[in-house]
Image 1 (cartoon, rainbow, N blue to C red):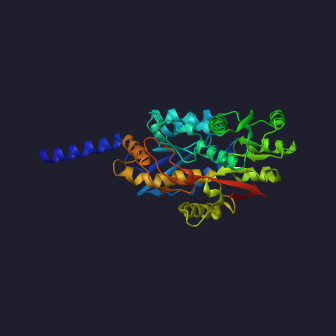
Image 2: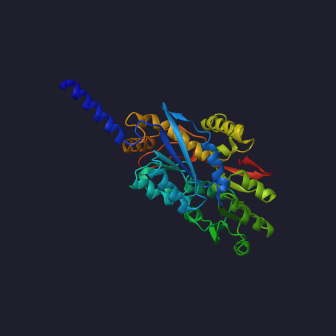
Image 3: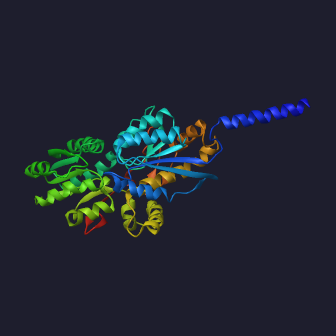
Length: 386
């Protein structure tokens, strides 16, 4: 009887421990924050679409995706992040779409020790890898990596004078910080530095000042559909120099709204944008073409964008990291979140739709020059620039 009672006591203790562990041993919960409405919707909608195509099982565990819209607003992004962590008790967060929102989410994720994979570009999201940013990773190419591609192209094109116009938020500011350093280092003179808001309806004054300074090229540091406004205004003023955009504008809505005013525009982008045009020997091509086929089967021909790729690549990261984390702990626990963070940080040579990822304690972006190409817009199409 004593032995039986002891056995029952042990079983009861185990049951209590299991209940106390919250969601331990349950399915994996992935929280997703996207800008599906608002000024950044043309970026967030493809990301949301890609999440719907992600696997519902990883490492033998069922996966639940909880997707929330932050309406392109950083306050809402923080609110959504808190809800996902405190109420839904997610194991990891993917998001958000734009830089200001991702920056605002960092402290919330770090305080709760929840790993987060951003779909925003700014290097400041993951640099420096301090105590808070040790929990933060990202899939898009750093703005510093893309800025160097733009400046390299300018140098090859013998650009000597440049005008800059960027969004007045952290995306535009970070691009200015990266590009201005490279301009100075390479002897390219900045003859104008302008900014505008994502909901502005006119940039006439800014464009008049830029055109009046007679630059050889203009760099527009914007994203999605707001990137069209300065471009059209420059064309209305008959500006004939080179126009560069950033990877934040690489989607079909940008092409549709810009129309013929975009012809000749150059921008850095991930290989996914021109997957058919990159060499077969490039390992990224196989992964990019697979995702393109999956996405366009669901959403239509020519619907894939690099922003959809940012979300898809976050999924590929988790497919690689989750099985390793499951060897140490179970979903729903603090131990699993810690193990997942460590597993993500140890990703090596993972081929994504946009590049090859190698993460480390000092590098939570993990992409190199293989993650960028220069593309040109011609008649509503993206062409790989030679």
